[in-house]
Image (tube, rainbow, N blue to C red; front, top):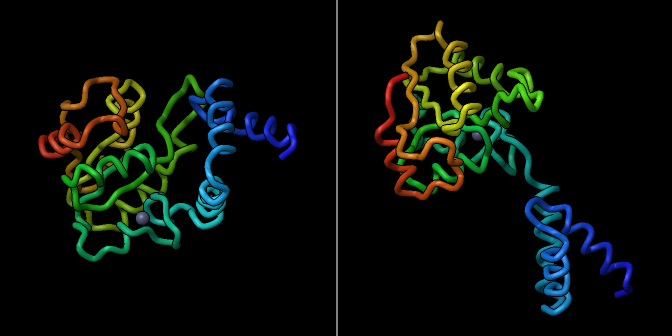
Length: 197
Ligand SMILES: [Zn+2]
């Protein structure tokens, strides 16, 4: 491997979130030390995920087919719909094991200061789903931040005309903390203790 290849790898790794120059160097030299098979398995995993994974056409969860594993699972409670900001929040709730309904991934939150408005999210599709679907409960599981709360409020207003109960995760999650980092027990408690909005 030429010096240029190493430099290029360090540059690429250094663009990843949370990876500074020093970490990028450490990772690059690690990849040079391990077996070729192990290093290439990482390269393959990146290629596979970008070639095969897309967003579910119904809920925007990550999926390798047009509909995701949750949407196609007949054992899920199709009367409950949990609204999350990102696919990784969905994963965190799935890992808590406290929820067996369906999801809707917003692909972000309303953040006027970052120039993100309602039209940049999947809110229109959500309203369509609620109009078409037979949901009894919509669970707001946006993050307990100013923007997450604002997004939940906006969506609640959009859904006001439908005969559904809107609930919000209980505040077991510390205000301002991020859903994906909450541990399983806290997340399960927040789901169990959800309250009507
Ligand atoms: Zn889906």
